[in-house]
Image (cartoon, rainbow, N blue to C red; front, side):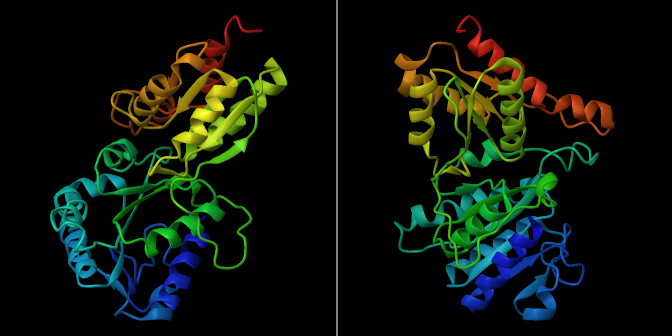
Length: 323
């Protein structure tokens, strides 16, 4: 995944002189997760800029550069640190095009890794997809494969709207085929990762992989064929693909790593219930992270995150009595 993201950055910087990268340790250190490895040497200090540890300043500088016609890609070291930049993200990047009636655009990408599983504790491991999903004016991308990581990042850089680009730390080492050429993944187009007829499982970020593994076990051990959908972007959301699947399977399970209250799953559950209620044969099930701050202890951290067995349990609850 990290190589695919790096290729996207390099290709877009080659394609457009206005694209530049800025953030904490993106230059000399080559990024906290080595996504920007080699880019400083290739493009120089003018376009790969190390910044002070000041997230609000970094994003604010990016907003100003974008308003002036450049296309900044801002890297924050973790999604948790983006909380320090909420004023610039919400009150400026997202709101300025609205306040100026579209006459001023903010074409910038704010990349931020997140998610648990690495014993980084409560200040480096959270999942804030739901937080950014709420804010009008922002686009939100959640890539799950190297191919989509590259194609979505290229699309994000070319978009005239501010994009929150959330990368799961556990997926940086993921291997996968990346099509050659200038592939762009349009925002708002979900991927059906596995076809099925008994239940629809929607997995967000790393949970798309957890859902796919659970689906295989459900097929082998329970004879349940699950359709697994990866939304790829949460704003815009390809709700049509999700609803069409639910109309076919009559059951839905949403899987996310974030907190249960007001989460992505809560939003999707409401949308499905509102728009496909007559097709549902069981209540929509949600599988989420625990309602706690991410623990440092490995055992407790794993207990706070969803796993395949949690998805299987939810699917069995949704399909109980149907077979």
